Image (cartoon, rainbow, N blue to C red; front, top):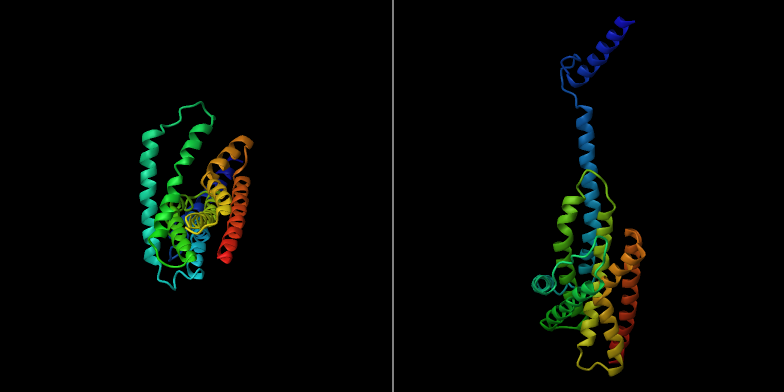
Length: 269
Protein backbone atom coordinates (compact mmCIF):
# COMPACT_ATOMS: atom_id res chain seq x y z
CA UNK A 1 0.00 0.00 0.00
CA UNK A 2 2.86 2.38 0.81
CA UNK A 3 4.55 1.74 -2.50
CA UNK A 4 1.28 2.40 -4.32
CA UNK A 5 0.93 5.80 -2.63
CA UNK A 6 4.49 6.68 -3.50
CA UNK A 7 3.91 5.76 -7.12
CA UNK A 8 0.77 7.93 -7.21
CA UNK A 9 2.68 10.87 -5.77
CA UNK A 10 5.50 10.41 -8.24
CA UNK A 11 3.09 10.26 -11.16
CA UNK A 12 1.22 13.39 -9.89
CA UNK A 13 4.38 15.46 -9.55
CA UNK A 14 5.63 14.13 -12.83
CA UNK A 15 2.44 15.30 -14.51
CA UNK A 16 2.76 18.78 -12.96
CA UNK A 17 6.38 18.94 -14.06
CA UNK A 18 5.37 17.93 -17.54
CA UNK A 19 2.77 20.70 -17.68
CA UNK A 20 5.23 23.38 -16.58
CA UNK A 21 8.29 21.91 -18.28
CA UNK A 22 7.90 21.30 -22.03
CA UNK A 23 11.21 19.43 -22.18
CA UNK A 24 10.05 16.94 -19.55
CA UNK A 25 6.80 16.48 -21.45
CA UNK A 26 8.73 15.69 -24.63
CA UNK A 27 7.54 18.85 -26.42
CA UNK A 28 9.80 20.84 -28.69
CA UNK A 29 7.82 24.13 -28.29
CA UNK A 30 6.90 25.81 -24.99
CA UNK A 31 3.30 25.80 -23.95
CA UNK A 32 1.51 28.57 -22.06
CA UNK A 33 0.98 27.72 -18.40
CA UNK A 34 -2.53 27.82 -16.89
CA UNK A 35 -1.48 30.59 -14.49
CA UNK A 36 -0.36 32.81 -17.35
CA UNK A 37 -3.63 32.22 -19.18
CA UNK A 38 -5.66 33.09 -16.09
CA UNK A 39 -3.60 36.26 -15.53
CA UNK A 40 -4.05 37.33 -19.15
CA UNK A 41 -7.82 36.73 -18.96
CA UNK A 42 -8.02 38.74 -15.74
CA UNK A 43 -6.12 41.62 -17.32
CA UNK A 44 -8.44 41.62 -20.33
CA UNK A 45 -11.51 41.64 -18.09
CA UNK A 46 -10.25 44.58 -16.01
CA UNK A 47 -9.45 46.55 -19.17
CA UNK A 48 -12.90 45.70 -20.53
CA UNK A 49 -14.47 46.92 -17.29
CA UNK A 50 -12.44 50.14 -17.43
CA UNK A 51 -13.49 50.65 -21.06
CA UNK A 52 -17.15 50.28 -20.14
CA UNK A 53 -16.85 52.76 -17.28
CA UNK A 54 -14.89 55.21 -19.43
CA UNK A 55 -17.43 55.04 -22.26
CA UNK A 56 -20.36 55.41 -19.86
CA UNK A 57 -18.77 58.47 -18.26
CA UNK A 58 -17.28 60.33 -21.24
CA UNK A 59 -19.28 59.45 -24.34
CA UNK A 60 -22.43 61.32 -23.24
CA UNK A 61 -20.32 64.48 -23.01
CA UNK A 62 -18.96 63.93 -26.50
CA UNK A 63 -22.45 63.22 -27.88
CA UNK A 64 -23.85 66.32 -26.17
CA UNK A 65 -21.06 68.47 -27.61
CA UNK A 66 -21.70 67.15 -31.13
CA UNK A 67 -25.50 67.15 -31.07
CA UNK A 68 -25.94 70.51 -29.34
CA UNK A 69 -24.34 72.36 -32.23
CA UNK A 70 -21.29 73.55 -30.30
CA UNK A 71 -18.96 71.81 -32.75
CA UNK A 72 -20.49 73.85 -35.59
CA UNK A 73 -19.62 77.08 -33.76
CA UNK A 74 -16.04 75.93 -33.07
CA UNK A 75 -16.72 76.37 -29.38
CA UNK A 76 -14.02 73.98 -28.18
CA UNK A 77 -11.69 76.66 -26.84
CA UNK A 78 -14.63 78.47 -25.29
CA UNK A 79 -15.36 75.30 -23.35
CA UNK A 80 -11.70 75.06 -22.37
CA UNK A 81 -11.86 78.61 -21.01
CA UNK A 82 -14.97 77.67 -19.06
CA UNK A 83 -13.09 74.69 -17.63
CA UNK A 84 -10.20 76.96 -16.62
CA UNK A 85 -12.70 79.21 -14.84
CA UNK A 86 -14.02 76.14 -13.04
CA UNK A 87 -10.53 75.33 -11.79
CA UNK A 88 -10.01 78.89 -10.55
CA UNK A 89 -13.36 78.92 -8.73
CA UNK A 90 -12.68 75.55 -7.09
CA UNK A 91 -9.28 76.77 -5.93
CA UNK A 92 -10.88 79.83 -4.34
CA UNK A 93 -13.50 77.63 -2.67
CA UNK A 94 -10.85 75.29 -1.29
CA UNK A 95 -8.86 78.19 0.17
CA UNK A 96 -12.01 79.68 1.69
CA UNK A 97 -13.10 76.35 3.21
CA UNK A 98 -9.64 75.61 4.59
CA UNK A 99 -9.50 79.06 6.20
CA UNK A 100 -12.95 79.44 7.71
CA UNK A 101 -14.29 75.88 8.05
CA UNK A 102 -11.97 73.57 10.01
CA UNK A 103 -12.26 69.80 9.85
CA UNK A 104 -15.22 68.32 11.72
CA UNK A 105 -14.02 66.57 14.90
CA UNK A 106 -17.28 65.09 16.08
CA UNK A 107 -17.89 61.54 17.18
CA UNK A 108 -17.74 58.55 14.89
CA UNK A 109 -20.81 58.33 12.69
CA UNK A 110 -21.96 61.87 13.60
CA UNK A 111 -23.01 64.27 10.88
CA UNK A 112 -22.41 68.00 11.16
CA UNK A 113 -25.57 69.39 9.56
CA UNK A 114 -24.76 73.03 10.30
CA UNK A 115 -21.18 72.77 9.10
CA UNK A 116 -22.15 70.94 5.91
CA UNK A 117 -24.88 73.50 5.24
CA UNK A 118 -22.37 76.33 5.55
CA UNK A 119 -19.95 74.51 3.26
CA UNK A 120 -22.73 74.01 0.72
CA UNK A 121 -23.36 77.75 0.83
CA UNK A 122 -19.85 78.25 -0.60
CA UNK A 123 -21.13 76.59 -3.80
CA UNK A 124 -22.79 79.91 -4.57
CA UNK A 125 -19.41 80.76 -6.08
CA UNK A 126 -20.22 78.31 -8.88
CA UNK A 127 -23.16 80.49 -9.87
CA UNK A 128 -20.89 83.51 -10.03
CA UNK A 129 -18.38 81.57 -12.12
CA UNK A 130 -21.03 80.37 -14.56
CA UNK A 131 -22.32 83.93 -14.91
CA UNK A 132 -18.79 85.19 -15.67
CA UNK A 133 -18.32 82.54 -18.34
CA UNK A 134 -21.64 83.34 -20.02
CA UNK A 135 -21.08 87.10 -19.83
CA UNK A 136 -17.78 86.71 -21.73
CA UNK A 137 -19.39 84.81 -24.61
CA UNK A 138 -21.42 86.53 -27.30
CA UNK A 139 -24.33 84.78 -28.96
CA UNK A 140 -27.71 83.31 -28.25
CA UNK A 141 -28.74 82.24 -24.80
CA UNK A 142 -28.72 78.56 -25.70
CA UNK A 143 -25.12 78.87 -26.94
CA UNK A 144 -23.96 80.61 -23.77
CA UNK A 145 -25.66 78.02 -21.57
CA UNK A 146 -24.18 75.02 -23.37
CA UNK A 147 -20.65 76.46 -23.52
CA UNK A 148 -20.63 77.24 -19.80
CA UNK A 149 -22.25 73.93 -18.82
CA UNK A 150 -20.08 71.74 -21.06
CA UNK A 151 -16.83 73.38 -19.95
CA UNK A 152 -17.83 73.33 -16.29
CA UNK A 153 -19.08 69.73 -16.27
CA UNK A 154 -16.16 68.38 -18.32
CA UNK A 155 -13.59 70.01 -16.03
CA UNK A 156 -15.39 68.57 -13.02
CA UNK A 157 -15.44 65.14 -14.67
CA UNK A 158 -11.72 65.17 -15.45
CA UNK A 159 -10.64 66.49 -12.05
CA UNK A 160 -12.86 64.31 -9.85
CA UNK A 161 -13.44 61.06 -11.76
CA UNK A 162 -10.64 60.49 -14.26
CA UNK A 163 -7.99 59.25 -11.82
CA UNK A 164 -10.39 57.12 -9.70
CA UNK A 165 -11.66 55.41 -12.84
CA UNK A 166 -8.16 54.83 -14.20
CA UNK A 167 -6.84 53.43 -10.91
CA UNK A 168 -9.91 51.70 -9.50
CA UNK A 169 -11.75 50.35 -12.56
CA UNK A 170 -8.56 48.60 -13.68
CA UNK A 171 -8.26 46.75 -10.37
CA UNK A 172 -8.42 43.01 -10.01
CA UNK A 173 -11.73 42.95 -8.14
CA UNK A 174 -14.96 44.09 -9.79
CA UNK A 175 -16.78 46.87 -7.95
CA UNK A 176 -20.10 48.47 -8.85
CA UNK A 177 -19.04 51.86 -7.45
CA UNK A 178 -17.20 52.70 -10.67
CA UNK A 179 -20.32 52.07 -12.73
CA UNK A 180 -22.18 54.28 -10.27
CA UNK A 181 -19.48 56.92 -10.60
CA UNK A 182 -19.89 56.91 -14.37
CA UNK A 183 -23.67 57.22 -14.13
CA UNK A 184 -23.28 60.02 -11.61
CA UNK A 185 -21.13 61.94 -14.10
CA UNK A 186 -24.07 61.95 -16.53
CA UNK A 187 -26.34 63.28 -13.80
CA UNK A 188 -23.77 66.01 -13.13
CA UNK A 189 -23.83 67.04 -16.78
CA UNK A 190 -27.60 67.53 -16.65
CA UNK A 191 -27.24 69.36 -13.33
CA UNK A 192 -24.78 71.90 -14.73
CA UNK A 193 -26.87 72.49 -17.84
CA UNK A 194 -29.85 73.21 -15.60
CA UNK A 195 -27.82 75.47 -13.30
CA UNK A 196 -26.36 77.43 -16.21
CA UNK A 197 -29.84 77.90 -17.69
CA UNK A 198 -31.18 79.14 -14.35
CA UNK A 199 -28.29 81.60 -13.96
CA UNK A 200 -28.82 82.88 -17.50
CA UNK A 201 -32.55 83.42 -16.91
CA UNK A 202 -32.03 85.03 -13.50
CA UNK A 203 -29.47 87.54 -14.80
CA UNK A 204 -31.57 88.75 -17.73
CA UNK A 205 -32.23 92.47 -17.55
CA UNK A 206 -35.75 92.05 -19.00
CA UNK A 207 -36.80 89.26 -16.64
CA UNK A 208 -40.42 89.72 -15.51
CA UNK A 209 -40.85 90.13 -11.75
CA UNK A 210 -43.10 87.10 -11.35
CA UNK A 211 -40.22 84.88 -12.52
CA UNK A 212 -37.92 85.97 -9.69
CA UNK A 213 -39.41 83.79 -6.97
CA UNK A 214 -39.48 80.44 -8.83
CA UNK A 215 -36.01 81.05 -10.27
CA UNK A 216 -34.63 81.88 -6.82
CA UNK A 217 -36.16 78.70 -5.42
CA UNK A 218 -34.74 76.55 -8.22
CA UNK A 219 -31.30 78.14 -7.91
CA UNK A 220 -31.30 77.47 -4.19
CA UNK A 221 -32.36 73.88 -4.80
CA UNK A 222 -29.57 73.37 -7.32
CA UNK A 223 -26.94 74.83 -4.97
CA UNK A 224 -28.04 72.87 -1.88
CA UNK A 225 -28.95 69.66 -3.71
CA UNK A 226 -25.75 67.89 -2.66
CA UNK A 227 -26.29 68.88 0.98
CA UNK A 228 -29.89 67.66 0.94
CA UNK A 229 -28.81 64.40 -0.66
CA UNK A 230 -26.08 63.75 1.92
CA UNK A 231 -28.46 64.55 4.77
CA UNK A 232 -31.16 62.35 3.29
CA UNK A 233 -28.77 59.44 2.86
CA UNK A 234 -27.42 59.86 6.39
CA UNK A 235 -30.84 60.05 8.04
CA UNK A 236 -32.53 57.22 6.12
CA UNK A 237 -29.39 55.10 5.64
CA UNK A 238 -29.92 54.68 1.91
CA UNK A 239 -27.87 52.31 -0.18
CA UNK A 240 -25.62 53.50 -2.97
CA UNK A 241 -28.00 52.54 -5.79
CA UNK A 242 -31.02 54.02 -3.99
CA UNK A 243 -29.14 57.26 -3.36
CA UNK A 244 -28.14 57.43 -7.03
CA UNK A 245 -31.75 56.89 -8.07
CA UNK A 246 -32.99 59.62 -5.73
CA UNK A 247 -30.34 61.99 -7.07
CA UNK A 248 -31.40 61.25 -10.64
CA UNK A 249 -35.07 61.84 -9.81
CA UNK A 250 -34.35 65.16 -8.07
CA UNK A 251 -32.17 66.31 -10.97
CA UNK A 252 -34.91 65.30 -13.41
CA UNK A 253 -37.51 67.32 -11.50
CA UNK A 254 -35.23 70.36 -11.48
CA UNK A 255 -34.61 69.90 -15.19
CA UNK A 256 -38.30 69.75 -16.07
CA UNK A 257 -39.10 72.78 -13.92
CA UNK A 258 -36.24 74.79 -15.41
CA UNK A 259 -37.17 73.75 -18.95
CA UNK A 260 -40.74 74.90 -18.38
CA UNK A 261 -39.59 78.31 -17.19
CA UNK A 262 -37.06 78.60 -19.99
CA UNK A 263 -39.55 77.80 -22.73
CA UNK A 264 -42.14 80.11 -21.23
CA UNK A 265 -39.66 82.97 -20.85
CA UNK A 266 -38.23 82.64 -24.36
CA UNK A 267 -41.62 82.42 -26.06
CA UNK A 268 -43.03 85.31 -24.02
CA UNK A 269 -40.31 87.57 -25.41
